[in-house]
Amino acid sequence: MQNLTASFREFVERERLFAKTDKLLLACSGGLDSTVLAHLLHAEGYDFAVAHMNFQLRGEASDGDAAFVADLARTLGAKFFSKAVDVKKETLAGESTQMTARRLRYDWFFSLLKDGQNFDRLLLGHHLDDNLETALINFIRGTGIVGLSGMQPRFASVVRPLLSISRQELKGYAQANEIVWREDASNASDDYLRNRVRHHLTPVLRDTFGMTDKTIARNLLNLRGAETFYHKGLEAERDERRTVRGEIVRFYREGEPWFATERTFLHRAVQPYYGFTNDQIEQLCTLPNNSFIDSKSHRAYVTDDAWTIAPLPMMKRTAGKVIEEIPFLLDEDNLFVYIETMKKPSALTSPNAQYLAPQNLPLHLRPRKKGDRFQPLGMGGKTKKVKDYMIDEKVPVWLRDHIYLLTNEQDEIMAIPGYCISEKFKVLPEHDEVLRIVVKPS
Image 1: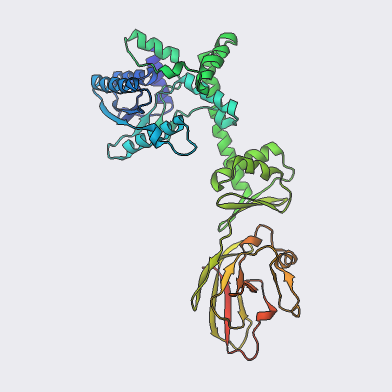
Image 2: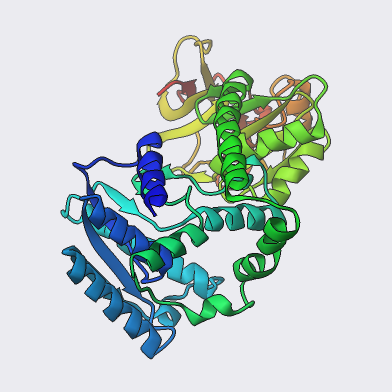
């Protein structure tokens, strides 16, 4: 079994997973993979501790696993951490038992990393067969190159030093070194997709089609390498297509877009950051001009040349003598609206300022609503839909919901700050005071 030890050393060094000076925490279930990994770490002289979570799902068998791992740690001279949890009580709405167990397990492991024990790495016992199963499961459920590349040997402080070694090699090493381990009876069941892949799909690939450990490892390595360049290319494409003005982010569309490339771009460059679902991302590829879709936090506006992402409009109330500054968008700039009462100046033509007749408080700033109408100054009292006014002023569709309207207590539109005031609320000669609106940077 010298070959397995050499493979382990070579993989750890090649992937730069950890050093002999590092303090390691091994997540150990008592199964073949993590038990063999514990023995390998001990044989190679690493400083490591063992952590085991008892999910109490299999009665005496679960307690037996916990006792076995505790004895393993004692035998190898490793510090031991254990925790028992009631998975059923900890399950959140929409979670399966497996999802809950995974969440609880990782939350606890990461807490151990941060609680002053000074661990440098968390080690997991996933091996080559686990990695193949993960890639196949991802493909079955639907995935791209990221899912096909399987598990990463290292992600932040989490490392998987057995990913180049097959289960059969681990079993041979254990038998040759008289290492015992615990078998989870649920591994024989076909209740879970991973087990069905393990029992029925991977044997066909190996026995019928001749897929070998070497081929599996090479394919996953190739895909992982391709994934690295994929991410670099995607970041370059994202930077090239993206413009940012305050909270407004615009991604320009290609002149003659291909559905597949635009779809991939949106899934990877847009979805992770703005809360859109998979279905919404699919829709963004095909929605007509001047459409929009809302996530819980953002709105994506679709035009022929771009997707524009902006925070969802929020209605804000104002109160007091001087109305507080309100975040506002004018063109593509993040500006603020300042509104105050003041003595009427000698000239009502100040840059970036609008003047209205004095008003009783409270006043309000709100987004436009369907059917809003007002009397634009200079139209002799005729009314016009706010929507039509914005179209005539060539206000971009994605910007219209982020421009607030100033209204009085009766919800009459007094002004569109930065654009136009209402004829009904213009300053008259007899007014000694005015209401001044200023739109400017904070």
